[in-house]
Length: 123
Length: 107
Image 1: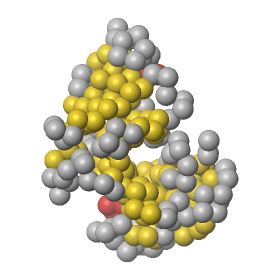
Image 2 (image 1 turned 90 degrees about the vertical axis):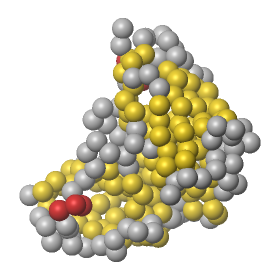
Image 3 (image 1 turned 90 degrees about the horizontal axis):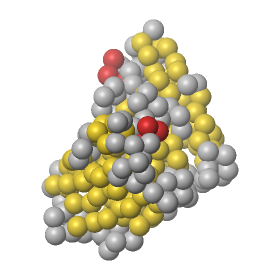
Image 4 (image 1 turned 135 degrees about the horizontal axis):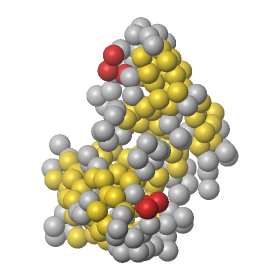
């Protein structure tokens, strides 16, 4: 059974870079039909798509965050990572990693998700 | 960008009730619509994909319908474990967007 686990600092200072890693177990990150994505959820609010990556390194970012986001993949470690620079308090959120399944017409969804990790931006 | 709007934002219902949640897209998205359930402090869980296809392992109490801009999630007979927040998500075009959520509470 595929599992994803986020890891990284829970506290980041304003203007610094948020860095998180998602470790995939129970399956290979190099499987062809899957992308690997990041979604975040500010406390008490809804879900926001950040971006996703294919194992080849092709990336897709939300334009609202594109200037600050980098998603990368390390197939040798079965991991993918998120970097968000110049963070502010508005970036405080639970960050989830998830597998994006893309199988064909209308078959495009996120499943499963990691448990999420809270990142607080504060000095 | 495609905006997703859910209604209602919150809903009180009783065990055994039939409940319907609506999701509207700002433009046609065909059937590129997914539904997720999120319980407090947990990650979202996929319920329905492609508007009406039930994810493997999800109870048949859940069903989805719709196409174009208007979609519904129906729970046929509410059980205690169904009280949660529900989100729709469009996968028609990037950036993929979610509705604001519908919080389902016990009456």
